[in-house]
Image (cartoon, rainbow, N blue to C red; front, side, top):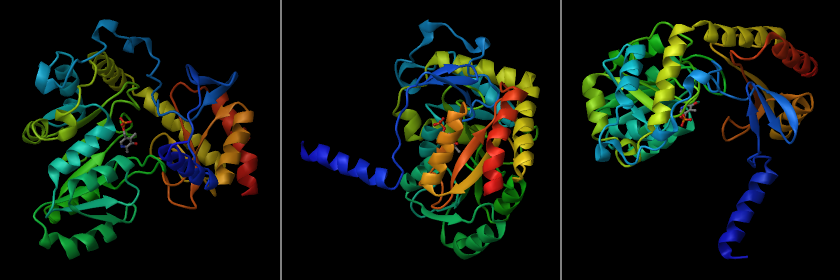
Amino acid sequence: MTSLDQFATRRVEAFEEKQQRRVLRPMQPRGVEVLVDGARLVNFASNDYLGLASDARLRTPVDMAGAGAARLVTGNHEAYAPLEAALAAYRNKQAALVFGSGYLANVGVIPALVEKGDLLLMDKLAHASMIDGAQLSGAASKRFRHNDLAHLEALLKEHRAQHRHALIATEHIFSMDGDRAPVEDLAALAKRYDAWLMVDDAHGMGFFEEHPPVDVWLGTLSKALGSYGGYVAGSRALIDYLATSARSFIFTTALPPAVCAAATAALGIMQAEPERAARARGYAQQVAEALGLEQPAAAIVPVVIGGEAEALAESARLRALGLLVTAIRPPTVPAGTARLRLAFSANHTPAQVQQLIDALKPARMRA
Ligand SMILES: *Cc1c(COP(=O)(O)O)cnc(C)c1O
């Protein structure tokens, strides 16, 4: 074994000991079900909330598979403008810019907005891609307690004056908790302290009619829209600036046009068929109610278990019952809060949702 292999093996063993090793499992999608090791499981682990990922209307010609280069290099393929216009309109903003993924949008946008000498205030539960963007930015970065406006204001009072620019960054619907940020109040607070507000709406897209006054909306095309890619929406001035400065936009190959066309079609369907989001949210609310859990804001319901081993065991138990439910472990969630993350789709059937409730109820009674 080379020293590199020894190093890698030791690192994996350390994860294994903490029950935090992650492995890739082969699976074949079958609509709202998946085939895993020959078993057919109902998929409660996907972010395909609106059930659009397998929708035939999203299929696009194969000859648009690759973009060839970055958009600033080869020119702007005609697939991007309609998607960006539709995203801007959906967000009630002047313009939008598509990135290779939501992750790339965060690691590009945050460092473009704040740098050394600036202040970045982020929710404690903000997504890993925002944390990575914060580190790349070099800004003085502080975390406020989850959805805690008083704590955020205290940090603004203490630190705002010593910095040139300030950015508040949070998620809209929290990916591992399913609750909603108080976006309207955050916007008011941001205004009062001359700070900018950026909201990552990866998990709320399609679930809300109103769009509160947020300076920067960011999101993904890979969840509700069932496609791939990320985007940011804001003023024309902001988007023009990002297109010429965000490194994860400039120095990477553009999103494949086929993927853009699929996302554009999905956005249209999402807006024309609001009953999809209503159905997914209805299932989430039904399950939360049945299990005595807090009502979800969109289609995610966390069932906090505690330890890693217990969460894995619970996930395995559900799997034996034909249900795919992922155990989410640290560092994705804080230590001691390993959980089952239930995600609902418009394509689930009432019978499948009832099956999940029946499988989970005895476990909740024991807890
Ligand atoms: C999934 C997610 C991302 C990353 O989006 P991708 O398009 O999958 O890279 C970013 N932010 C949040 C909050 C997410 O949940």
